Length: 446
Ligand code: ADP
Ligand code: MG
Image 1 (cartoon, protein in one colour):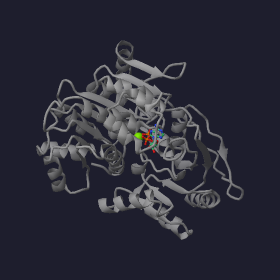
Image 2 (cartoon, rainbow, N blue to C red):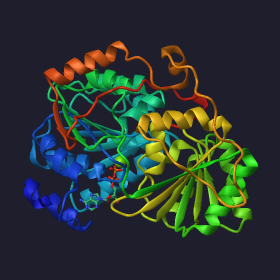
Image 3 (cartoon, rainbow, N blue to C red):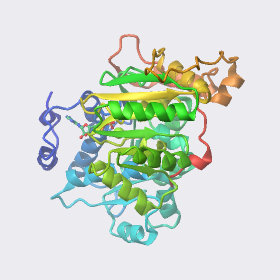
């Protein structure tokens, strides 16, 4: 199948030429016709598989080809969890809209509120933004969404992790047109929180799943190292960075403080490095990301704000300096490499404090990693005893627990309404993992 077979508007086909892609990826092949047909979608596929175009192309096509429901309200609203991702998606949208009369606005936390108000007064056709700031503008009546035709939630699960559920509901309520279409996209949509909000926001959705969120990514080589303590992790990082054929790398850490400390450490080893976290001003965040995507420095040290969606082709290596929680962030962090058919390496350091998060990752991915060692840096740590299981203990750790009521509801819904596209023989198992809420201090976005 080729892009031209979708019957997309010729203006859109022309702007697509700019990217030089003839053939849609699998998720694009599955999701674009469903979206064009006007269905609500719950769509998932692995990281780096082209989900952005899978929603932007049908969205733009709709705006070109159908009459607007309102003259003033944005026709398409795209919500994403982080400011960095909002900018990236907005950039792709702008390229696809170049030369057309269609207009767009970027609405995100940390940037000038009045400038955004002015941008909204121009009645853009498309709005890309983070949920918190968009809700602020809604409350101030800087925009109305009654005429919005298409609401897209990219990385919907992460927005829930970050505590955006109320903002998502407010936007859902404001976008009240009965013909509104809603699309959810992520590499990981199979959890209870998503199923609850999906039930509120989506109408008889098609479930488009190319593989499972837990499938091993064939372009990412995973390497796991047990570590005794912080110094051990640092020595290992130094060894791996100096021995890898590293174009660009991202080191993920759990805390904002660690980003600065580690970035300074990496710099002291002779590499160029910058730290990214919600502690930075928005202009500093912008310049770090711009410098990194232009290849001006080699190693980005970041909290999970860089874990979702960011698409930088030169990222050849990802390092989990500590193991993420919730477990699915592992998929997203490591998915910053091995994108669009390129190969990548991901290294994960597991110390005693990481052990149970690591086990949760293994459980989530349904695999057991083999660990590797570096000569001279062998660990004495061999792992901890298994924890008592049971719903209560598991819930505390954000790990597997007994299904809640919502799971049953979802299972019922699947059998009654959802169309499943799944390339696995054994079918997909929806919505299982209950999730741990993030520490509010880690919520950098609005
Ligand atoms: P995802 O959201 O699934 O993680 P992205 O939408 O960020 O993936 O796309 C990953 C990369 O693949 C991007 O650089 C994008 O430009 C590229 N890409 C998208 N569609 C295609 C295609 N049909 N053919 C080749 N590359 C593509
Ligand atoms: Mg994406």
